[in-house]
Amino acid sequence: MDQLEKASQWIDEKKDPRSARWQAGLENIIELFLPVLEKGRLTPVRPLEEEEISIFNSALERVDLSPGLLAAFLPPSVANLILPPDSVQELIRIDKGNPSYKILILRPGKENRLLCAEISEHAHRLGVDMFQSGAFLGKFDYDTQDICIMELTKVVRAHAWEKYKWQYKDYLAYTLGWFERVASVGKAVSVDKNHSFFHSPTLVKMNRVDALFLLLYEVLCLRFKKDPKGLSALPGTDKTDTSAEARVSACKSLAERYLLNLLNLVKDLDLLDFKNFTNAEKHGFDIEFNRTVEKLSLVLGKMDLP
Image (cartoon, rainbow, N blue to C red; front, side, top):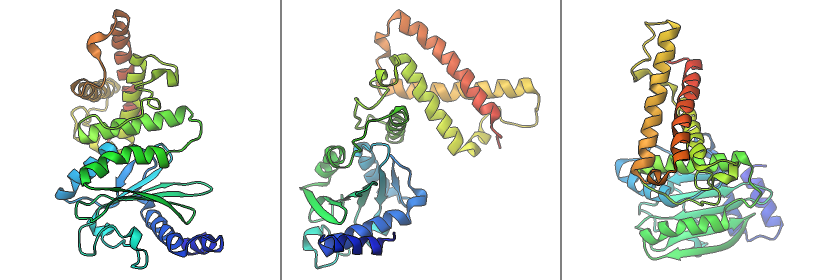
């Protein structure tokens, strides 16, 4: 069903034609940029200008998504073109000509839930509008950009998060998404500790040392998969030496380097209290470090490095 048909169906179901068409239009924007979006991640729909990156990072710090949500960050080059019709004054948050920054969050399902946030400091009314199946559910208004962005955590968790019972893959996806946000902004970000296996290892039947290395292993595997070309510039990937021994040594060296970089990030940001490790945890740390290096080196060994 295309968006025009969807809007017509909602109107036939006695939904306000204005909100029905507006939600359908916003969903059409998400569908347009679907190839660049990734579930559970806030993603810019276009490369950002330098002055836009800080606003995106502020949003990234606060927008906490459950694994199935689609979230698009719209810089002014896109957001300026997306304005409600004049007939819907209650949805107009920024005047034409002012730089708009919007975040669209869609919870797909039998009844789509959509959040549209205007976070531009130039808006005369910053905030979030909520829709479901063509109906306008309500709004949240804020006085400043800082307050608006700070409150996004509460709004998204309360009104967009999926309510189903999470499985292992969901805890894994959520925790990976949290850590990638940490790595991107370089500081602690909003997180629901009851859904992060790093903060609550019992979710995946592990202790905190095992959970740490599971997280770092999965993060690195994901990065290797996304950007194998990035490995070509690192020492040890020169294909002139094709011996099996050289290949194994190079992969192990790369794996150890990547793992140590992430462990240093965890330490620098105080994400885990290493100082209070018990003797058993210290011993387990050494074992898991070596085991994870071996596992990562095997992953690298199977890749066709540039």
